[in-house]
Image (tube, rainbow, N blue to C red; front, side):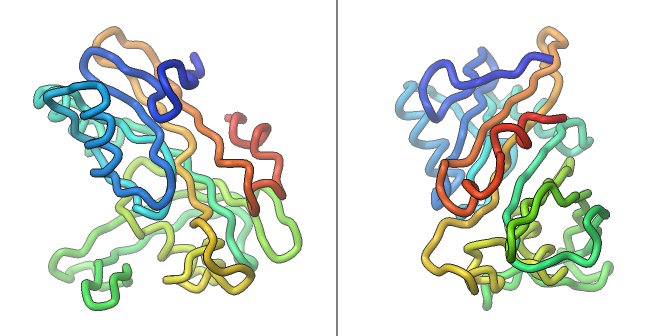
Length: 224
């Protein structure tokens, strides 16, 4: 499986006929990234097939036509795209390796995700597997694998498990440092290119800033 690294410009990993894969910086809305790239490349159509949390960074898959959007979103809904997130969390998890599953809803009053009963109107189900990769004193590097997600859900999950993501002031992850970027990145995306059957594997690394620099991200992020 080929590892695809930046070739065109820092924000774009791959620019194909029907889709584009790019990297969104933290503190940027998905729509802002899409509009910037669309304008920069002079595209008539560009639409992301999923949304990343504005505070997080990571890989976005964008369709360049309505037909491509329908095809890629179908692939996403059928869980045919593999996502790997990495997070630095504050505190300790009860288990170093486990799965997480919950029904949640977004509370407009608080601007936060909350757990709700399964039959609640508008409830969203999400799940993921996680594992501890490394620990340095009060913080730990966690690998998260999933096939579907909604903005805010991973942040909520780790907060609920007692280990909020570093820098997450909304969920209690700013006890060690304030006014820092959220330490959550969608670092790897894998899926099949329907045009030719190629297995595509995109990888990005976080900026070399704390707390990421406490860990060997170059090695850990590129392992399968």
